Image 1 (cartoon, rainbow, N blue to C red):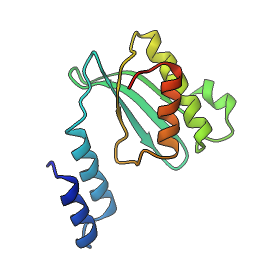
Image 2 (cartoon, rainbow, N blue to C red):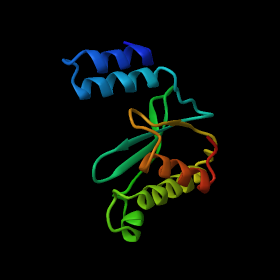
Image 3 (cartoon, rainbow, N blue to C red):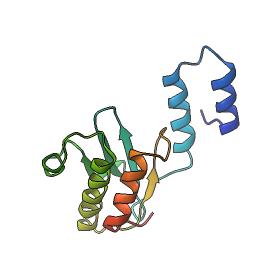
Image 4 (cartoon, rainbow, N blue to C red):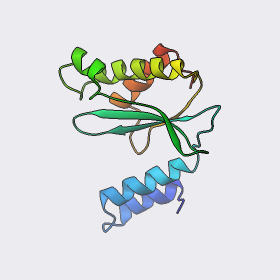
Length: 135
């Protein structure tokens, strides 16, 4: 079910029965309809929890994950104290860019999911750009 932003905001503001998780799912589905990853330009999908951040580069046509990374990886865990900082996200973005460049992936489409492009999500994107990925 694809809904426009206007309809989503109306649902959020006027319908008190719409649960936050349901609203988040509707928002993610409306964004996912726009963003598709191909083999030439795969999709960088981001998931953010309270403690850590996870990212994976996905080819939607063949439905395969090409590269994945998180703040729980051993290489990143050595350099950070906890995974909920912008520094940890930026470090992870650089490592993800390094892994993807090893597999000859240079151009991607950024999928922020239901999260705002702010804070840890923005730090991850900046780290990936600094590592050499082209959005």
